[in-house]
Amino acid sequence: MRRKVHIVPIVFLVILLIGLLYCSTYTLKTVEVVGCNLSNEKAVEKAVKKEALMGNTILLYLNNEFGKKDEIPFVSKLDIDFVDKHKVKVEVYEKSVAGCIEYMESYVFFDKDGIVMETSKERHEGVPYIKGLSIKSWQLGEKLPIENKKKFDMILTITQLLDKYDLDIQGIEFTADGEIILRKDNIEIELGDGSNLAVQLMNLGNILDSEELEGKTGVLYMKDYSQDNPIASFKVK
Image 1 (tube, rainbow, N blue to C red):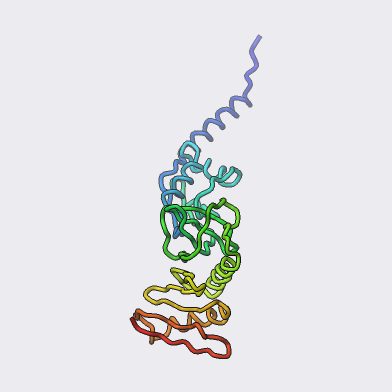
Image 2: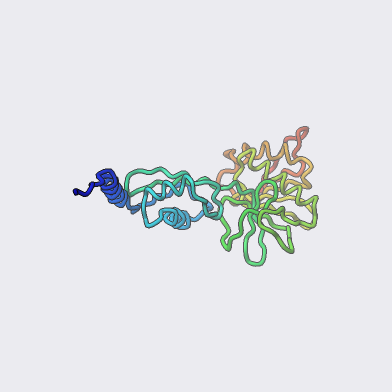
C-alpha cells in the first residue's frame, strides 16, 4: 500500500523558506537622519535601529506601522522613508519649544503654554533663555510652578508673540524693577513693563531688519513704543 504524499504542506513549507530567505536579505545598513535642530541625530538613529528587530528593514517597517514608539527628547514625530533594502531616510519633526530656564545646573524646556517638555544639560541655540525666573521643583508634562503668576503669564505672552511673528530672540530677562529686556545677537531690546507687548513685538522684526541696526551692538529703546507713539531709538555701545 503506497503512502500518500502530502504535496500542499511541502510546497507551502518551501515557499515559506524561500520567503524567509528573501526577507533576510533586507538588512538595515544606513539610516539617514534629517531635521534635527534640538534633537540628537545619534539618538534618533539608535531609536530607529532598535525598531529594526534583528537589523531587518522589513521588521522596521512593520514595527514602525504597528509597534509602540520610544520617546526621543524633543522629537514629536518621525517619518521613515524606505529608500531600498538597506537604507532608510528619517525626517524628524521636533516639538515646538517656547523657552527654557535654568534649574540645578540643567535647563528645563517648556512649550508656549508653560508645560515642561524636556530637560537637558545642554542649552540649545534658537530657544530663548529666560532669566529672572526661579522654580523650586518641576514635573515633566506639567505646567511650570512659577510663584509669580503675573510674571509667568507675561513670559507666556512673550513666547507666543515671538512664535506668531517668527522672531529669533536668544534671551528674555526680567529686571529687578519688573521690566522686560530681550536679547538678539548683540542688541538689547528694552520693552518696559510689558503694557504694549503686542504692538512692540508686531513691529520688532522690521526694526531689527533695518539697515541702521545691521551688525551693530547696543541698546534698542522701545519702552514708550505704542500704537500712538511708534518711535524706537538705538544707542550704540
